[in-house]
Each structure stands twice: as C-alpha cells, then as structure tokens.
Image 1 (cartoon, rainbow, N blue to C red):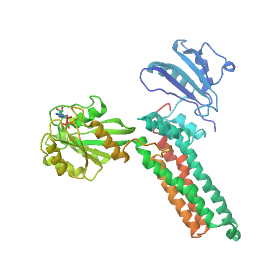
Image 2: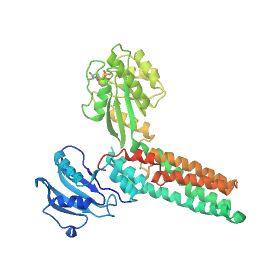
Image 3: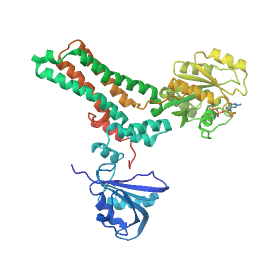
Image 4: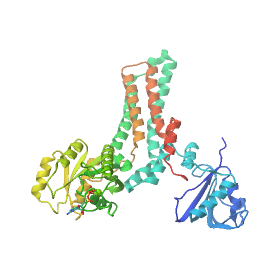
Amino acid sequence: MESDTIAAVATPPGAGGIGVVKISGPRAIPITLPLLHPPRELSRLRSHHLYYGSIIHPETEKILDEVLFAIMRAPHTYTREDVVEIQAHGSRCGLGAILELVLKRGARLAEPGEFTTRAFLNGRIDLSQAEAVIEVVNAQTTEGLELAARQLKGYLFEAIQAIRRPIETVLVEVGAAIDFPEDVEDIIHPEPFVQGMLQDVIGPLEELLEHYDEGHVYREGVAATIIGRPNVGKSSLMNRLLQKERAIVTAVPGTTRDFIEETVNIKGVPLRLIDTAGLHHTDDALEAVGVRVTKERLDEADLVLFMVDCSIPLSDEDIQIYDLVRNRKTILVINKIDLGDQGLVGRIVERLPGLAWVEISALYNRGIERLKAAVFREVTHQSGPADLPSIVPSLRHKVAIEKALAASKDAEEGFKTRRHAELVAVDLREALDALGEIIGVTTTEEILDQIFSRFCIGK
Ligand SMILES: Nc1nc2c(ncn2[C@@H]2O[C@H](COP(=O)(O)OP(=O)(O)OP(=O)(O)O)[C@@H](O)[C@H]2O)c(=O)[nH]1
Ligand SMILES: [Mg+2]
C-alpha cells in the first residue's frame, strides 16, 4: 500500500538552538529537495549525510533560514520510508514557514505519533518499542529512562517472543493430535508438555509479573497528596521537596485554595506531589470548593502525606482527617518540630496510631531526608535503591501477561488431566493472543489508537 507523505516540526514549540522539520513518505525527497539552495543534484546526495544550505521560497526567492539538510533513504530510517530532516534554527516562525512550504508542495501534516505509527506498521519496531518511545520522551528520572530505553532496545519484545515460541511449538503438536486422533496416544505424552509449559512459559511469565511489582513505580511514578488542616505547613513541604518556591506560603490559614501538582525525584521514583487546600469546615464558598477537590484528589492518591502541626494541640479536624486517611497508605508527617517538644510528638503519635510517622521542620529543612526515605519505603517496600530488573512491563503489559498466565495454567492443567486436545489448543491460543497484544500482533485498532494518541506531533 502506497502511503502519503507526512511532515511536522519535530522539535518543541518555542525558541531554541535548533529546530527540525521532518518529512517521511515516498515523496519526501522530491517535495523538499527543490527548496534547497544552492541546488543539489539528487544523484550526488548521499543518504544519511548532512548538507549545508539555505531554504529558499521558490516564488519569492527569499531566504527562509540557513539549514542542514539530510536525506535518509528507505529502509534504514525511523519510519522505513524515505525521510528528510531539515535542521533549521529553533525559530517558531521560521520552522512554521518551512513546514508551510513543504505542505504546499504536497505533504500532509502528520498526526501526533504518526511517524512512530509508521515505524510500527512497517515492522521496524514492535508495539512495546513504540510505547517505549513515548516513555523515553517523557521520562522523569534516569531510572525510568533506563527502563524505557531497554524496552526501546527490544528487551521486552524478545522476552515475549521467547515465551510465544514454545507455546507455538506445543500448539503444532497438539494440532497434530487433533488432526490425527488415532495417533493421539503416540503424540500426547502429557509429562513433557507439562514440564515445558512450567519451565518455558509459566515460569517466565511469573518472573515478568514479579519484575512489574519490583519496578513499575520507577516507570509509572506514584501520586502523593499532602493533606492536613490549614496552616500546618503543607505548601512549605511542597516547596522544600521541590527545592523552589512553587506554592504560596503565608501565615494566614487557607492560603492554598487550588491544588498544585509537581513531580519530584525520590531516589529514582517520580513522585507526583499534590499540595491541597487545608481541610476544615468552612463557610467560604471558594474554600469549600478547594476542600471538595482535596477529597477527590485523596481518592486518586497512591500515597497520602497527612500533616499535623506539633506546635499546637491536635484538633477535632485533625482527628476527622485521620479517620479519612487511616485506612489508606499514609505517612503521618509531624511538622514544625522546631516549635514543638518531644512530649507533644509522643502524644500525637498516641492519638493517631497505626501510621508510619516522620518528624520534620519544613521551614528549617529538618527531617526531609528521613521523610524521603519513608516515602521510598512505602512505595517500593525497599529500604534503598535496588538493582532494577532489566525488563519491567507496564500496566498494560501486566494485564496481558496475567491473561496469558491464566490461560497457560489452564493448558498445563489440561495436559495433566488429559483433557481433549482441542480444548487445550483453545487455552494455548488464548495465551498466545494475550502475549500478541503486548507486541502488537493481535492488538485491536482501539488500543493502537489509545497508545499512539499519547504521542506528540512530530514523533
Ligand atoms: N516554625 C515553623 N513554621 C512553619 C514550618 N512549616 C511551615 N511553617 C509556617 O507555617 C505557616 C503556614 O505554612 P503553609 O506552608 O502556607 O501552610 P499550609 O498548610 O500550606 O496552609 P494552607 O494553604 O493555608 O492550608 C507559614 O507561616 C510557614 O512559614 C515549620 O516547620 N516550622
Ligand atoms: Mg498551602
């Protein structure tokens, strides 16, 4: 199928050192080459080399920008199609003008993720690698980046294929048993099948699920909501963890009315930190909205940082908030220890039992490292950064792996109990299909759309 030629600015909008216009498709070269000045003969241009020149408007003959121009011939390109990259200055206006020219000459504006979609559809990468592209772009920590980069290299793809292959082999043999039932006794000796399923399929699938448990927080991050009464120091803690004055801090209770969200790096785990409006009874309509939103945010949180002020006695409101959070994953953050005394801290812990707790002073930067360690412990169940597994599936992959595992266990059971070959084949095929969803061989159109719509334009 002949595809059309697409183009987009591949670098982020705004001013920058350089900016890139990317064109991919069968007409990428004829569309762009005539724009280059001094003119170059196609036969004398080498693939994957940079050529210096200017982009000239063909009608007005005005210079649009000074550029480096590269043609990359199929199939050794990102999309496996002919690709042209025009590296210009990072001027929004200049890049826009070049793009407009390219579109006028017959290219179509690329949809978000369309270059990567083509790389996938043309078989250069599998679906898990395409997903890794987004993650590399969006990585928040070097650990998250490392996991994404390994997936981009094809580690997960290889692992999944290594599990699919033995299932396929077994399916062939089971298929023979279905086709020639008279020979079935000769073919189906259950023991080797059971052994093979355990060793080559079920074991590796279980291992992948373990790796998910160990590593997923590094790639997905966790959401932590800071909650507490007005004025206890929530915004001060937010700023302290971010190491910048992001949220407004004042001595007036009710300062924060909206929620503020920023990501911090906690030993490699991207922690999406949410500062909220102080929780209390209020007659102020605006504040009341803030309080409602805070309660909603609480439901989305993976972790709650429940903050109290130890320079004043606990109030009924503190106790009400405690009731709200006690059954969630919560760390009790006792703030303002510069003003409180140990007796007070002891009494607070006694009245708010059952929670991991840390004493800090957000204002004077005390206990912050201990708090970070406690957060890390809560979300990873480890005390220090461990060696990351080399492959960590994403949530989408995990769901498919669980499906494959259940079907594989059914098949194994089927062999053991000498179930009819046709029934075992159904289970095996189900396992195969579930694994196929991960790498994109049995993925529905809907899931593909969902995945590629997360891309930005030009990727
Ligand atoms: N002494 C002392 N004061 C603190 C500490 N942390 C915060 N404060 C002060 O407490 C006051 C309230 O701090 P904020 O960070 O605005 O408190 P908040 O919980 O965000 O308040 P609301 O947004 O109104 O709910 C400010 O005057 C801070 O400087 C601390 O550890 N020690
Ligand atoms: Mg605040």
